[in-house]
Amino acid sequence: MQVWIGICFAVLLLPALVYDGRRDAHLLAIDADTLVLHPDLTRYAVRAGAGEFAAHCAQCHGSDAIGDPARGVPNLTDDDWLYGMGEVSDIERVITYGIRSDNPKAWNLARMPAYGTLHPSVNKNITPLDPGQIRDVIEYLYYLQGRSRDQDAVARGAAVYSNGGGCFDCHSIDGRGDSAIGAPNLIDKVNLYGDGSREALADSISNGRQGVCPGWIGKISPAAIRVMALYVYSLSHPAAAKAY
Image 1 (cartoon, rainbow, N blue to C red):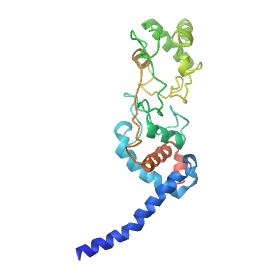
Image 2 (cartoon, rainbow, N blue to C red):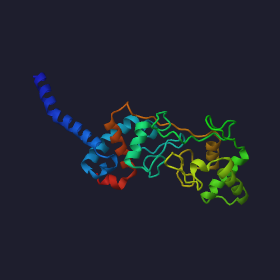
Image 3 (cartoon, one colour):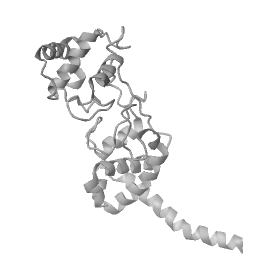
Image 4 (cartoon, helix red, strand yellow):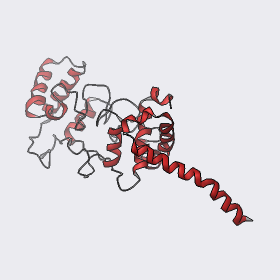
């Protein structure tokens, strides 16, 4: 009797398992950025993605996905994107290949030099900055944020930022960063590391920042990566998520 019940139960489950397999195939057959136009499929993906996120991403980003500025782990629930524009395909690329993960398809370009050390970069010829120059650059950044009136320090910091320090090369001349390479915006209120204080900025400039996010390609299935991407997208697009 127990064997017969087990066989019947397996038969009853079979259509559901096949149906999920078909949904996964359908999920991967559609362009990632148009999946939100398919509410039923997206609802399935978001539910599945929550479990995948808990298993693979929550250890760093937290179960609430708000990250940890003490370690430079970004908040995934806001609409501020360091890599790409926050589209499903951008998120999927990060999950797939990682950040500075040594995968050739990962975002590997933005590596913040440690300007307070003798050799700020291991692969570029970059001149160190002394403590006074670092303070002046911070004052210039505070000026861009509307928080500094020390015009002399601001002028000196602007010169270092735009010339000797070469900060503009990644963060752009206006300090707004470049999401194409993962260089953060320095004038908004979002801080990847620390609380935006002078001390936190000095730590970043002096010691550099080169955080790593692992790539999951070859470790979990393409379907699992896609549902995670849709789940993360839903966290940062609450209005759209309500439609699911």
